[in-house]
Image 1: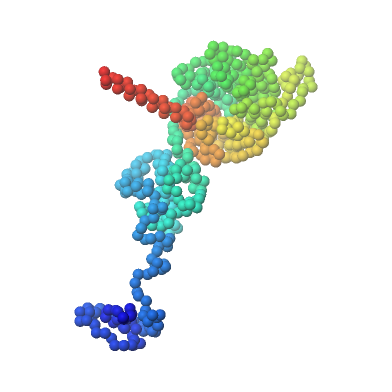
Image 2: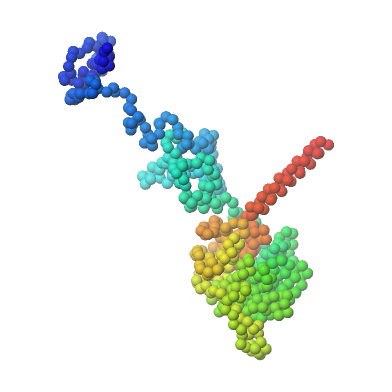
Length: 563
């Protein structure tokens, strides 16, 4: 039987002899005429003579397809070059690319050129949420190299993918194609700016007021509080020596009171029930009015200067009044002696008061840049007055017989502290704003007195309001923009600016449903902004009610068609 090395074609033997050169042994086989004629046209390539090698088995190895161990047979990632890898493919993105195509991209570019910036950001956020891989590829392409070339990623613009799937950041089990797109928005490993914009633009915020009302003769004074919105959807506005009530449901306006000539209304605040309004005057009086009967219930004295701030305790139903005499008095209109406590801790006019939602802590801000926190149970320092209550020249605190010191006094602000607001989602979180020389919004842990965060707004902070449905806070400012700013908490990312006022925005109030904010400015206008949005529960109820209403209308239409 002939060996395998001897069974070779004449052409291959001739090529092997030519390669070996003069070192070969044996006679050269005769080449067929057809082969000779064909090889005559091919120019001979000079080759360098090589040293003869001895091979195991007497013949050189066959020259064919490289083996599987060769690096040239596989891609650098170790995958086959011709069979797509199902685990690394994005079926949703591929379907989107096939169905939409370049024509859809051109139409999107044309629509984006005519759309507002908010709409463009909203589309980008929706694309990032629904097609996370496509959004990652767009971000990688937009951030090119220094030489102008686009940065490429494993998730390129391809329908089929032949590489290995990318390793998941959260687990080593590979990328999960069925992971919810909502988790991508909250993924902390992603870009913080994109995640913040996606969460911020999940709800469109109108930047124009929904309603504008005139407020002639409103007093331009930073230290006063002339706006309050009741739980019964009635807005109280103090204009000079008058107080007007505007019913938001019926658009009716009524005059509640008119003070004597020379006196002025300096503060207003609704009682928790919405039936009584407390009014502070420039003549140092605190008046309680019944808005259903339009009558004065009681006038409470105790201050020696104007009453610029008022705040109701939602639990005890007592009202606190802050005055230019640097005192904070607590009144109980149901008792014969209405003054139940005197809070002493400020040195100048008290221009801001706000109770926590649980009625446990009172925050007060003063013109001497102090922010004081008081316990409702008066657990701070107490000292009985040594002066007899009936002394002719006894002070107000002595006539009351009891003084209360603040639990903690915070001195971090550099200007008057008027803007105060308690967070409805966190019990001990308090926000405060400083005046022109301070321009900051500070966040406090009211339990420990520690400052958590401080943001420089660039202008005077006049008022603050927390959203009841979202982790957002709105601030009103003075010179030079006279704008409202909507912030996302706790990072304090500015979501939008609301402009339109031509003078400093002194007061803010929130509707009972928590969706609308009204601002009062020194330009004698009231502007209503629908910036906070509705709560998820109310939106669900509205959806159910609309579905039921449609079912009822369809059933009525069926009955009419049958008749």
